[in-house]
Length: 375
Image 1 (tube, one colour):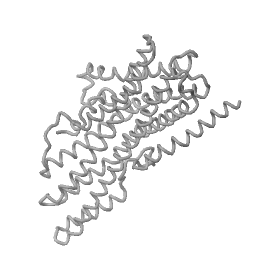
Image 2 (image 1 turned 120 degrees about the vertical axis):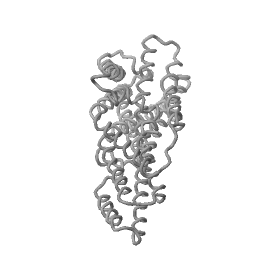
Image 3 (image 1 turned 135 degrees about the vertical axis):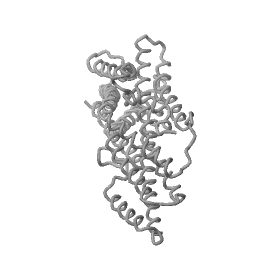
Image 4 (image 1 turned 60 degrees about the vertical axis):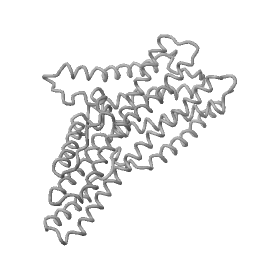
């Protein structure tokens, strides 16, 4: 089963979002390429339309939370700006890093094929149903329903424009979350290759120079991931942090500053949506953090296995010892972790980052609101 097959439906969606030209010859399959580009073009155009309407129409119905204070209105408009500009930035980055992305996929597939073909590892059967991926998509769809459909359907009346906005809000969030899940599972599948090599390295009869070549190829994948996917992960984490701050702020506002009985049942709906939105943002940052942390841990475990081979080299060929020394030298100059922005390493500290950022900016927004009341 190929690497792309393991990503399942997540990779199929990317053919319409980030990789429209994957295995599509521009000269022979121009119709297929145009068909794949159509969803991306539609998303970008409608995102630009929403941004323009939000900042040009004083009577825009984007902010339907029945809030009249200026601070709240600015925050809602800023939320629209970040969400729409975020998806635009992701899609444009997908085009900008298109060749690197395809090169990354080919590199991972080549390493995987070499592992299965030359080292006699058991080839897994093709699984049409990847349970974990479909479970993540199902949970994502449920959260999307709660945030978008559940809130809008509890209004007394829905106009045609409300229904259109409901559909596009749902599509925008789904596209954003599909990209998030794709990046997370991409990192996890590469981590599985580290595990595969580490657990089966002792079963190889002759650990000659080929085994070190495969390890070297695996290490070369890490900077490719950072160069190709690091910018997208950075934007997504910034968006998730902002969503967490906004959701927490409005959750605080409706809980402590509004009359529950006056705004009931709207208060009930918004409280549920705010909680779900915060959980969504924190969960995705945590998911990224655990995936990045596991990636680094599995690569370090592979290095430890190499050191164990080194301790047994008294009975081995000199070429093996030479390869081990060269490999250890290369390790000192190689990237061993997923990084964003070229500096920040993705690990479990991301959970504490989202909590601290949310708490800090929540206090700042509360102070601005109190200042507005004084004025």
